[in-house]
Amino acid sequence: MTVNELAAVKGFNAVSLPEGDREISGVYIGDLLSWVMGRAKAGDAWITIMSNINIVAVASLADVACIILAEGVTLDRSVAQTAGLKGVNVISTELTAFEAARLLGKELK
Image 1 (tube, helix red, strand yellow):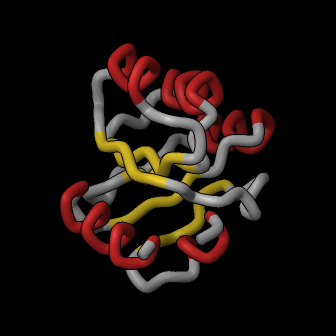
Image 2 (cartoon, rainbow, N blue to C red):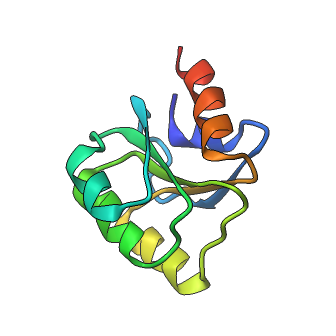
């Protein structure tokens, strides 16, 4: 499944999709940025409630396919713009992290 395909699934909304054709190969849930940097795998969809500028750097370093902002979390315009410039895909959802991961897991099968 690509990031663009995920953004089209009911309950998910595109925030920034500069590389929407990236394939999602797994899911990682975490909010402690240093932990995510060391454990998320390239190609993962990273689910978090964090929304500060540092998530863009972590997503880039970990080479995740996208960030999924759970529970209705939104990005400041400047963070969304930076994500676009850095090639970091961002999707939002009102779902909890568990609900988003469960739905994404079904889509990845």
